[in-house]
Image 1 (cartoon, rainbow, N blue to C red):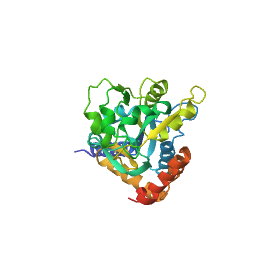
Image 2: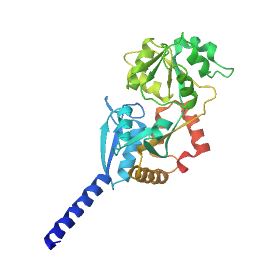
Image 3: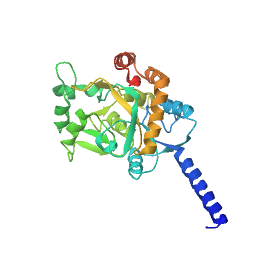
Image 4: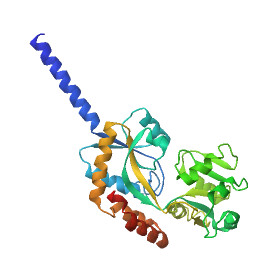
Length: 289
């Protein structure tokens, strides 16, 4: 083999290595509009408490070239399934997602899903409450006289997922698109009777709609549900994704037991909910895991 050819092959090999290293260092974050977790549009974009966390991660991971794209959870998971290298900053774990993504340790802790209902229609749920005032979700979902809406690709804790799975074709359980806020519009208008959502969501919705609606919401706990939910960063399954989440775990540990994004979340909660979340933080210490 001639010396010239060896030089050319060496240069090609070096170029390929540089290109591969460049791809390794590109970190694409896919965001879907899910206020007040992730705020994509409106008057205050990137003002959600997950947005605050993402800004912290980007600032503390300068070894990556960070890119941000707006898309649905469904598309993000589809791209992960195809092997595209990307991350989503706030997902719950479930079996389907674990097949295509590797997850960081906990990066978020929130009060769990509640049943959200218009306060002036609260009595409709009366037959489905237990002695403590919590909702028996098995009875609620089975009641065909009460209509709800489920946003496409939204994940719920097992106690809700299990009951929804019993009624895959039920006409009283509407299957909506990917816009999380659309279901709140339906609830406020009286088109549906209740929603499964985090208790931080209705307050944000009402703050945005203050000039257009005087409706009030109530958030009812779910009987048998745990009192907190953990959120994770999800990255495409494989060596690249594993390396990214390990780096994220290190950043979260360095942020301490009450990271800045948790402070931002606490500012969005009513005083009672904030106290509950602080109790969970002190008891569980999720960011030390």
